[in-house]
Amino acid sequence: MNGQATISADILASYAADAAREVPGVRGFVESPLPGRRGVRISEEDGRFRVELHLAVDWGASIPELGRSVQERVREYLGRMADVDPTTVDVVVEEVGR
Image 1 (cartoon, helix red, strand yellow):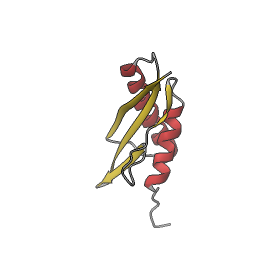
Image 2 (cartoon, rainbow, N blue to C red):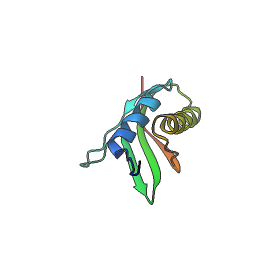
Image 3 (tube, rainbow, N blue to C red):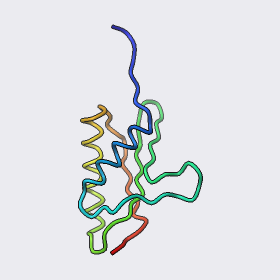
Image 4 (cartoon, rainbow, N blue to C red):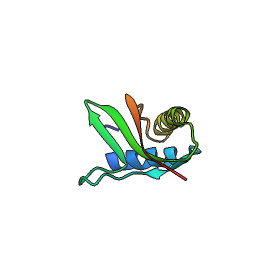
């Protein structure tokens, strides 16, 4: 059978969000006041995907450790669920809360 299948950026963003939420210390996502700028952004150029997550994290969480864990979890999850290996997974901590 010939053809191709594609997965929308919204589905990939949903997968990335699900994966990030599984990491202890992640409270949620920070939305931008700019239109179309959500807490999880997926961009694609020439078949290469970039993931950007804007997070709120728990007070006392080690931000470098949490960031690495989110990167690893998102990369693994997207690979398993969508056969996508992002070129970058950028984690931006926007808020630290109690």
